[in-house]
Every structure is written in C-alpha cells, then in structure tokens.
Length: 190
Length: 190
Image (cartoon, rainbow over all chains, first blue to last red; front, side):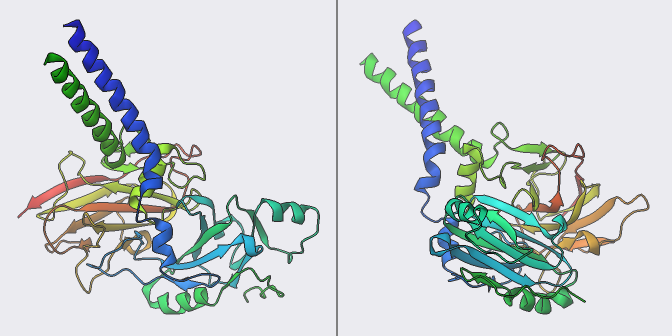
C-alpha cells in the first residue's frame, strides 16, 4: 500500500514538473505568433490600417469591430522611431508590442495628449543619449523608452459614429511612423 | 510485472496531471491568474509589460492584439449568471452596471472568434449607443429572435461567447474597488 502511494506521489510530482515545463516553454514553441500575423501586413515604418472586422469573417487578431486599428512595425536599431500626426477628437490609444506579443507600453489620449499624436520611441542606449542631450527631439514629443528593438506600434482609434469611420481612418493613415524625425510639429486643432 | 504496472500508472498520472492542468490553466484559468466577476472572466495581467508565466502562455496561445494596461480590459463570458453555457438557441438579457470606463463595446463571437451578429446589423453594441434605464443601468437583449429595447441581433446556432471590452478603465488595476459587472440572465429558448 505504501509503495503504491509512493508511485502515485511520484506521478503527481512528475506531473507538476511537466505542467511547469509546458507553461514556461509554450510561448517559445508556438508556431503561429502574433508577430508573424502582424508581419503579414507589411507595415514596416509606415502606418497601415487593418481591415475592418465583418460579421462571420475570421478575426485572428481579435479586433473590436467598433474601432479603427493602425499598425506600424519599427526597428529601433535603425534609430529612434517617431510617430506623429493629428487625429480628430475621439478616444485613441497607443500600444507597443514586442516580438513575444507582450504590450511593453501603452497610453491613451485621455492622459493629456489630446489630439496631437507625437511619440518618440527610444531604446536604452538612445534614451541615454537623449538624457545627455546628444539627441534632439521636437518639443512636446512624448518620450517612450522601449526595452526591445523590434516593436509593433498599434494605434486604436474609436470614431464616435460609424458615419465618421472613413474620415477617421484616413486621418490615422496620414500619420507618419518610422525612424526619421519629424521637422515640424503639426499645428494644434482649431 | 508489478513494477512495470506501477511505472505505467505513474507515467499516466504524470501525463494526465501535467498536460491536463496546463490545458485547464490556459482555458479556464480560475486558479491561475484569471479574475472572475459573476459569469465574466478577465486576465488582469494581460496588458502588463511583465506578465506572469500563465498570462504569457495564454498570450502565446491566443496570439491576438491584447489591450495594454492603460488602454482597458476585456471580459469574456461563456456561461450565464446561473452557470449554464451560452447558446444561440436561447435569448439573454444583460442587466446591471459596468465598472467606470470611457466607453465599452459588447460583441458575441463563436469559438473561432468570428462575430455572430446578423448581416446588415451592428456587429457590436457600444455604451454610447444604448438607451438606459432610469437609474443609469444597462439593459441589453441578446439573441437570434426579435427582442425589444437594446438588441444585439445574432445569427447562427450553437454555443457562443460574449466579450465586453472596457476602454480606459481602472478595474482590477488596484486603483478601483468598483468591480461590479452586469448579470447575464437567460430568457426563453427555442
């Protein structure tokens, strides 16, 4: 009886080890990753509007049909990335995804940014240069330090009504994204 | 002979416990990082820059564009408030209040994430689009058959999942104690 119990307990312990190994290695073993799905949109250094979700259609990225999504992939090893534009007055938010699909930074325009989308994304070395004032950035740029070089920038934009969707999507498509610093800050909305 | 039997039993226990608990942790996840509020579940750690290993594995498994912590939180329900699985054969009523958020959207999807809204109807319900009761609470009818008041019209048959996405919310972030979620009540069935 004692021996049987010992075998059962060893089975449970081994099961626990298998559980931990599965949980810890799953992110590395996944074949279809978020990064792979995003790369298919060819959004390197430009803002690409993701197709709207329609009823009955597959939705592999889990998008909200009410929102407009702008995607841009940047590589900070080419230099700091800048996201710049002016969006109509509605809720929008920005999230930075790393290659593992983890959101390393996110903010919304309720945090006092208003309608101006002016974000500079820097890696650790570039942030140090920035602190030493060896890198110039335009005034009003929200400085974001990212721990990874390869990033996907996702802008979620919520038009208050469906009728505004096309115009809002165009405004989001007009935002620039990439390693080149913007020379001029867009004028505030009238 | 007995040794071989014990060994086989131990291996069976280890595999069952190891893979079974891993599958459970990443689907239901009740004991592993998922928070529940009535029939609704959410992964509060999903938008953080350093998610726990279970959330990280869940992220890899879903490979979708998750909301960052500053952007909001998505709740999922696969059962009604009585614990019965949601099915398109029945109508449902959602009533109560949501935690404070800039706005929220409600969609019904199938197991593969396809939106189940009827063609030519709104694919989702948004907080700004609904008529509320006198005390500000929400009352939404969901189903395939004609229903009064706010109606999320669905098509199809079989089980479905409700996704309630709160944008710009502090719920479960440690900064808000308002964790009341609306109830899902089953109405008549076909």
